Length: 393
Image (tube, rainbow, N blue to C red; front, side):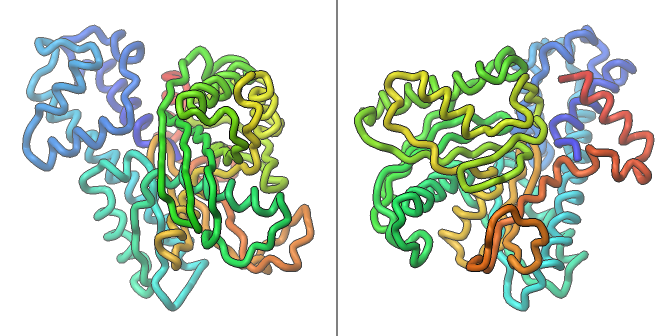
């Protein structure tokens, strides 16, 4: 499932090459300058709703196109493409959620925690998804709620739990008695941030967040350079907050397909979201991060105790607010979800699980079909989008 951003870029690039869009502009300008953040689709859709064009014009201007190169017809085409791509995204997501609702099959309301830039900022996406779901699953009760910064906060909460388990303290109820300061490092898509969450008896009393940039050179370079950049930013964050002398448990949100071997062990299966760092696939992301942290003089008190997917973090954050949360979903640069499954229905385990009743299952639906298993139902248009997406990376 290609992300909405990439599909939008592919369509616009094709229209520009065919002289059907921005015909007054240099066609070579598009692939070189238009990085197009996900939030831009939401901004264009706001113009659609309001019957205006100032946001769309601003996006084009910020992307290096001059006003003389953009006509009213160009604006209308961009707004139409944004609407079509957004509608497509809502349909795909609704189909995937419908499958989960039917599998969970609860008689009570199922709460779906959602995070991600596209979901947070798009003016129509939530309503579309809910409408499609009601059509497909009329017998199921559900509710979507925003788990704001769920991927980061959830990782910090998991770190709190993992820290308690590491100290061999009994875990009576999750999120009840955790007290302390916990870090989260959130890497995935266009987001890279470090977060501090301070808890008192399981209640958040303080949050600190700082966003950082990862250059294309690092994103497509050696894996060591990527993890060194993460450790560098982490060190800058704790130095700014004066926390270098405190022992801090850290939860690592690593939003890429990985094979979990334990709460603090996850092997990268494949890169997605335009990342392609060398010598990381098949290796443990926690080990690489720990090694990078060990190379930073002022990070020696940080202990990476957990690794989670962004969907798992969103599920955890959602469950803190809504106890009936069963699904955690991300809808931003890419899309993915996880859900709570009965342990008895999970067939493959690497460890004993006699005392486990439920387990969070990461679906990785954004990579569905990447292994070729659904090629038999793909159309020529799917192949064109895939090929064009790769050429624009």
